[in-house]
Length: 119
Length: 118
Image (cartoon, rainbow over all chains, first blue to last red; front, top):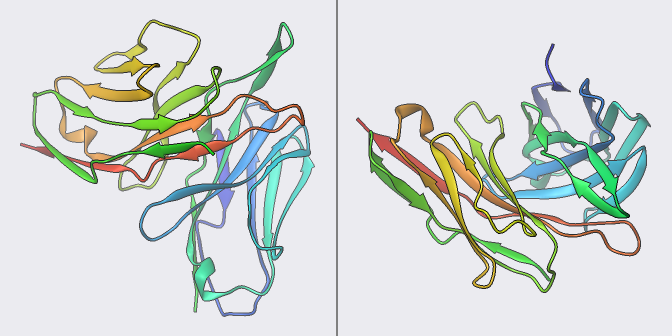
């Protein structure tokens, strides 16, 4: 009954490979996110999807492509992996809602993280 | 552009004592959200407390409370009666309002590592 789950937890791969990280949430939220946390613990948002539509797309290389097949899933595909991609990747979800025309956000729930190591 | 600054890379507190972690931010918006997240060694990010900018009252969650100073753009976290399990990395985060294109920004500070001494 995990709220936000990610697979795999650990991923070790060679430079140049293509890999995917999967994320699923069973909270019924309509917004999902991907974050990257580097070795210095700096946490940066990469993408956000609301109802399967991209709403935040920070400056990340085109090699990173999020895919949202439905509201409960937001997968991250990475092409041509580079050494600098090594980090912990977190998926998160939240419930945004409209009230009197304004968009409010609820708390973000994070997954356990995926540690990606590129050799 | 909005920024979030946590000026204390590391703090220590004695068990059962009180500690305050500082966070300042810069924004020209009037409507936004502020959060404190905790990241223990397990890596899981856990929400500690949230504050809506339109609310004047400081948020409180059990032993955790904030001092939200909107004019000063300050959002400090106070942990009372510190426990060993409070030892973790603490991140301050800012979520902007929604733009006309329907997007918004989430920005995290660089974190403060809290050590709790027995």
